[in-house]
Image 1 (tube, one colour):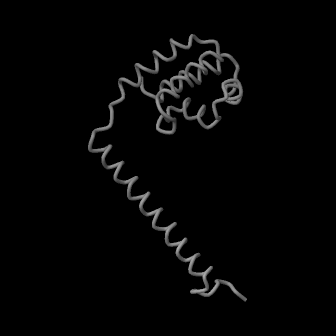
Image 2: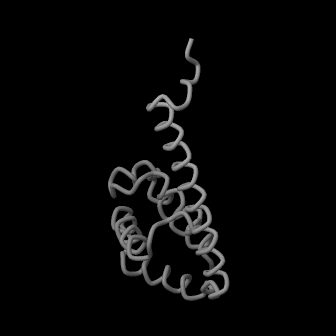
Length: 128
């Protein structure tokens, strides 16, 4: 069983009880996009593990399942999923650092441009 199978399991249990995703979202206060991610096994779209466990408990409670049974099923799946390698984590960390740096440089360039326009050192764009 993997995350997709676990999500299908939750979805099937919900459907057996005649409930919609919107019903689950309303009753649990879990955003609809996260209910969808949970049911489709897209755990990369979900927040930290502690939140996921609480979402699963709330979801199970609303549809009348034993919350701890649902959590145990999830933990079996989660243990079977290999953890990312240190090299992969480092690549992701570096990628995020470069993206952050690029964003900071763009914001800085826009700020410098706006300052130069505001002080009159550069002509105003679209000044007619």
